[in-house]
Structures are given as C-alpha cells and as structure tokens.
Amino acid sequence: MVKENTTYLSIGSNLGNRFLTIQKAIFQLHRSGCPVQKVSTVYENPAVGFDGADFLNACFSIKTALSPEALLNLIATLEKDFGRERTQEGYASRSIDLDILYYGDEVVQTDSLTIPHPRMTERNFVLKPLADIAPQHYHPVLKKDTRNLLQECQDKNVLKKTHHRLYPSREALFGKLQFLSIEGNIGAGKSTLTKMIAADYNAKLVLERFADNPFLPKFYDDRVRYAFPLEMSFLADRYQQFTDDTSQFDLFKKFMVSDYDIFKSLIFAKITLQKEEFELYRKVFGFMYKEVKKPDIYVYLYQNTERLLSNIKKRGRDYEQNISADYLDKINRGYLDFIKGHPQQTTLLISLETLDFVARKEDYEAILDRIETKLIEILH
Image 1 (tube, rainbow, N blue to C red):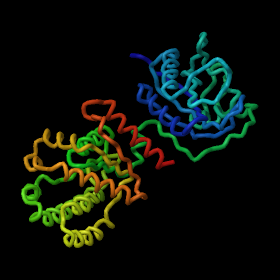
Image 2 (cartoon, helix red, strand yellow):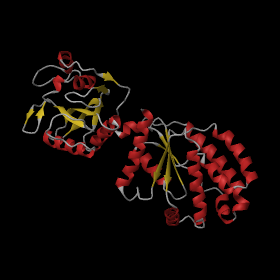
Image 3 (cartoon, one colour):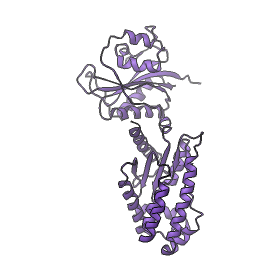
Image 4 (spheres, rainbow, N blue to C red):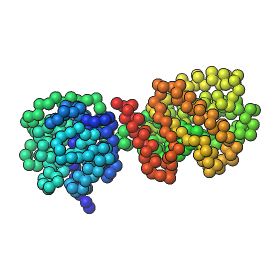
C-alpha cells in the first residue's frame, strides 16, 4: 500500500480575480488526486521584493501519495493552467504562486526542490496562515513549531485578515447551497442535468411531475380549447408539489436541485392563454408565487430551436411530436424576458449550442465550473 503524506502548501495571487484564482486552483488540485484537508484564512499583504499589487495569501494541507518531485510537477502544470510562467528573473506579479512548505516530516534537497521551503521562516504571510491550520507542526530541521517560528519571524510587513472563505473542494462549496434551479425550454436537457448534479453532489432531487396531466396531450391537439384548464392544472400541481418538496429538508442531502422553477407557469401561460384568461391566471399566480421558495441560483439552459426539436424527436413522447418551432421560440423569449425583468435574482444563462454534457465529460465539467464560479461570487 502506497503511503500518503500530509503535505502543506502556500498559495498566493496578485493579478486578476485573486480570490477566485486561489479557490479554483485549490479545487483543481483536489480533483487531481490530492484531496485537500484543511484551508486557512485568507490574508492580504503588500508585494515583497518588488513593486506590485497586493497579494492574497493562504495555506492548505493535502493528502498525497505522489513523490515530492511528482507533486512539484503537478503544481507547475496547475500554475501554467492558471497563466503562470515561471522565470529566473526574480520576483514579479503573478496570477498564481504555489509552494510546497512541508512534505510530511521529510527533508528533501535536490537541484529543483528544497523541503521544508527554505524561505518560509522569513515570511509572515506564509507562517500566519500556516499557523491557522498547523500551529504545532514541527519544522524537521529547526525543531520548532509554527507558532514559535511566527513569533520569531522578523518580517514586519502589514498582514490583513480578509473576509474571504476558502473551501477545500467543490463538494464543500456546493454544500453552502440551499436550492439550485435548472430551467430551460422543452427538450433543453434540464431534467438530465438536474439528475446528474443530484447524483454527483448528494442533492435532494426535485423533478417536475407532468406526464400524468390529462390535459397535456389534448392541449397539443386543440390549444385554444384546452389552454386554460391545462395551465391552471399545471399551476395547481406545481404549487402543491413545489411547496411540499422544497419545505421538507432532507438531513442526508446537502442541498436541493430542481428541474423547474414555478415561475415557468406564468411564462407558458402568457404564450398559450387569451388576454382575459391570462389576466385572471396572473392574479392567482401572484398569490402563490409570494409563498414559494426562491432558488439561490437560477440556471437557464439556452438551446437553439433546431436542437430542441431534434431532442424532442429523440425522446419520443407522442404528445410532443407536433410542437412547432414558433412555439419553442416564444418559450425561449418568455424565459429571457423573465430573466431580464428580475435583475435581483441570481441568474446564470448557459448556452448549450456547442455543448453536449451527456456525451462529453468536459462539457459537463464546463457547466459545473460556471455554477461554481457564480456561487463563489454570491458568497463573496
């Protein structure tokens, strides 16, 4: 069995969106087979040794079976992915800076790597965050723990504690969600994506139940006659289901994810109902909408009409086969108008025109990355 070592690293950035870069780098390292164990507070300090913007700095620990050299190579690749090009020309501003501080209790000395890090005892922006997560870890050469090293450090540069909070993994970040709503047009793939997220991140699954609605097949055959009873039926069912599902918290799940938001009722009703019918419908809807739970993030999956029609044909529901391109266009416009009309809502519009998140894992990852970024922005 390969031995896993607890390894401590420092991370910093003074270019671009500093916090977002640090957080995403930690997530990427976690996904690379080095699970992150602890993360420190984030500190801000002036650039040291050169003129540049202030840095954000933190420390974190990982479990790794990689050798020190292999870990160094992984870190170099990660830095390059985040736009860092290491040079031999001294200190300079950088989008990301990762250093290995300790590798278990080992002492490593090679042409490319020295562990413990040779300059860590000179930097309070390293020792202070390290003391947050490993106050009693002993320096294997100096035989002093982190607290003593920090007390003896001669670095007097100003170090400011920030409000930022780092998470060890995307799973931990998603645990801060309460409710995520995945919306989209007919055939956009919202239910499929919702199921994938629920399975991968231990979320309570809230799916719209509509297949048993007796008015739906009739509506597609005679829209004028069955539009109002269909929309009222949908509204009653959605309201009842939505309030039941979102009011019952599952202690064994981290958050809720649904494949619909109840506001879709008003979007569809505006398209299908006559003016007088819609005005009556809107009054009833208004009373209900005030009472329902709103999502932390409202994701709208935009898909072009051609692919929507193709997806509808593939899934083979008989009552959907006569849906027209014009009807789908109106639904798309209705959703986009809703998004524009609710700027206070945290909305994420994701175009699927070049993505296939079912067939390609990297496309699924791209969508998760967008949701992750939006959630980080909300929390900070």
